[in-house]
Amino acid sequence: MNVLMFAHGGSLNRGCEAIVRSSAALIQSRIRGAKVLLASERPETDRGLNVAAVFDGSARKLRKYSPEWIVSSVRVKWLGDESYALGRIHRNVIRRIKDADVCLSIGGDNYCYGEQPGWYEVDRRVKKMGRKLVLWCCSIGEEDLSERKLEDLRRFDLILARETLTYDVLRNCGLDNVRLVADPAFTLPGIRLPLPPGWKEGDTIGVNMSPLVAGRNPAALEAVRGLIRHVLETTDSAIALTPHVIEHGNSDLDTLRPLYEEFKASRRVLLLPGDLNAMQVKGYIARMRFFIGARTHATIAAYSSGVPTIVLGYSAKSKGIARDLFGRERLVIDTRVAANPAAALIEAFKEAVAEEEALRGRLADVIPRIQAMSRRSADYLADLA
Image (cartoon, rainbow, N blue to C red; front, side):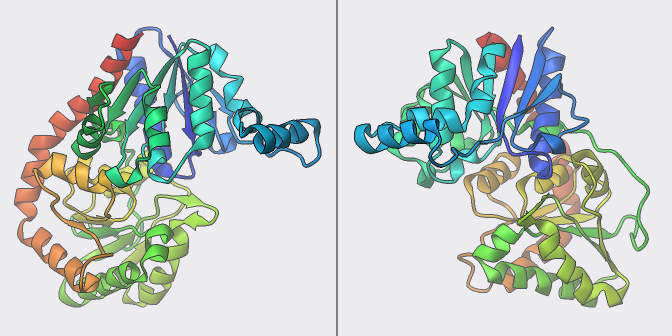
């Protein structure tokens, strides 16, 4: 079986990298003879991944006044047909469909960000060419759905929801092609590198903050700043600022580096480097006492390593994953609606400290079951072939 993964933004997002690495490993271990191909928007960032080949899957702009631009303009303006234009824009992916038996739309939360006409067109081409189409380990909230998006979701031979909130939303919309699994990154192994200067073994707290969350709600960044002060003033713990996405214009370093500069004089705050791959970052997270994170896959790295975790999130994926782990949305802070986000985060941290052993025990009990659900995704894929 040849499996083509597409809708991958590149491995500067360590969450995207974690999905590819763990998914490829699951597929290759559970489907004999499977060959995984990857179409990437930034193939130069994907060197060393455990896939058979990496292709350029980036979108191409139509050169103004070129023949294809003229044809596209006429078809869109006079016929209301964007199919030709989208097909040309996404031709790097579309030309690889013929090499695959099954096409996996990956990325996890690509369907959480408005309409995706480009991917809708790729999906149409996959089905037109007679290939199987799978939405791989996704999260979609009720607020993300539209009739156009539902029309696209009905095309899929299989939709794998990575948490129960998404599963329930899609099933309630009448989709019978949905199965419940867990994010493949729960199975990603960690690589343990030497601990950096300033790390306190057994008592280092990880902190991750994204510019996306900080930009949408500056109170979230202030809450993280307040938590760092609280930890420095009331504990002896070290703090490891932990970037998980380093894309230009969306780099966690842009948010974390100023925090490091502000608190480095304490000699208890350190900044992990941005050139670590997903497994290396997980190797550090696994040795933390607590983790506070805005990036979903940074928190998955913590959860799956048995580290008590506070999530700065409000999406279906954040709430759904926490609910599947704890039976409720435990230690998930929605800083958009909290009356006092800084106080809410400090209270959550106090709760995590008070319940540290219970949280570790719960994760030790539940993570093997969650990882079994991750592996089930490859079994569903095998059944589809």
